[in-house]
Image 1 (tube, rainbow, N blue to C red):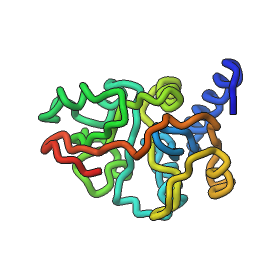
Image 2: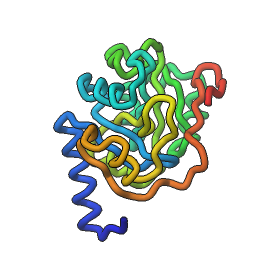
Image 3: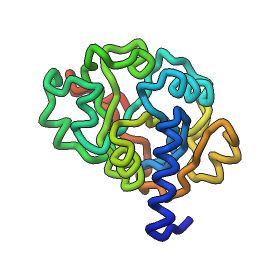
Image 4: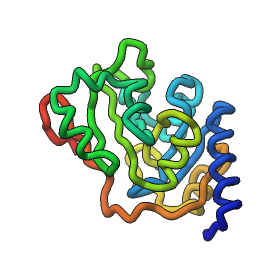
Length: 189
């Protein structure tokens, strides 16, 4: 879909309002469509887990517009590889970072770390910037199924299970973001 700037701004604002209202949205990321919500809204995160048909204890990835948004959930100063982390952002590099004490367990799952990245994808970045914080970013698909690559596929597969679909281009990545551990440097995906 092609937007003029007024339509684009209105679409971003509708997506942000859906998040603020406790809803679940679908939106384009670097590689595929993602499902997103307010990470501090337990009911919204649980809805995403139900839509995906996966376990809550797995945790979810969060994306942010900048490191300040990351620091609302992760203790960046406790990450031994902080220079590598910040040098990789913005971009498709997700890091497992030590959580802050008040990071919700429904976000980190059974882990003592949280998966986060500062996105370079323009539409995802706009969502986080306009929302004013990090949002959940998990692939739009049922657990074990292939990720959905366009708004029409999300609507066909998930229908009214999501509250808003931001129809905009993907980022052109050929694979999902890399996930690395900020303590050990090990690559997990």
